[in-house]
Length: 335
Ligand SMILES: [Zn+2]
Ligand SMILES: [Zn+2]
Image 1 (cartoon, protein in one colour):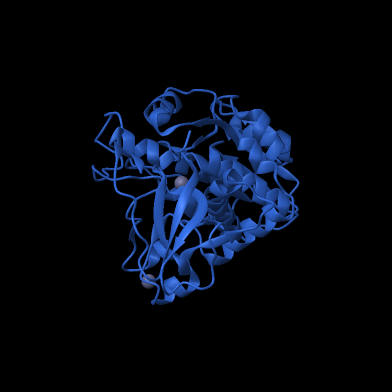
Image 2 (image 1 turned 60 degrees about the horizontal axis):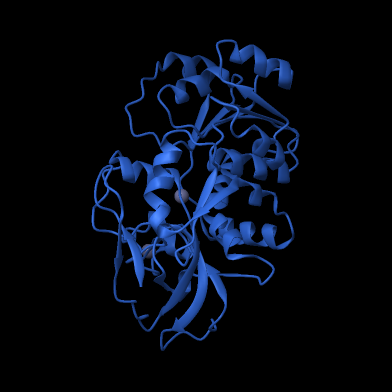
């Protein structure tokens, strides 16, 4: 099978031929149909995430079952499936809840979605209904990240919220807030690149980050937001979120910042702010995402702006880093 292997910071992924894995007794072999490029893949590429070299990454994948381990009876050849970004022990409390990154034994998939085939434990696979495409399946992971943060925030239809950052996670937060009946959703971003997509996902307003941000938000919402979703992860974003939120409000931390962040604690103290971080998703999130897409709520399709072959992975990441007007770029390992 053809795979794209990470070679180190700013090195092109090497496209190599590797033996197609065989599923163990409790595993499925899937033929990867699509795998989304994530912000974390960009941090892997630049070296900021300090990831191991020689590995096939890609964790936003969906594919078709092409072989079953001897003990797998609940899946059939030809079914479309997706799974979480990591694999885990399958026995502990977090595995039962399906919050796999909290399993003490979690690990990367042996080979990820930036390749033509991969194996996953059948217990961790989620079936996709025939009405959904494999591209929809590859959106389940980033949508589940957004849903988890929205669930942890406890927002309700009357909440007024601000989402800092218009990447896939911020846009996914917008989608879920809207699905839960929130009408006043302001997205704040540093450029207008994603404005159209943000409005299509359900934002009521889109504001460029500027000096008079507080006033612009108050004009849009009629007051400060009760909840700020920090989905930018850039320096200063946490302090900015705490500055924007209403006293006794909630800041949900979802940005993947790899820098030290300076915080003056008097600010959240005087406002008695609750800070809630959100890490990946659990089984409930995955099931709700799939059920929602299956019910025909397909607005998230507008996030996909390009599809590239494995050979295009390096170029796609470089152009995203350079600020290309793309949102979610998909890899088709068979293109
Ligand atoms: Zn991701
Ligand atoms: Zn476990």
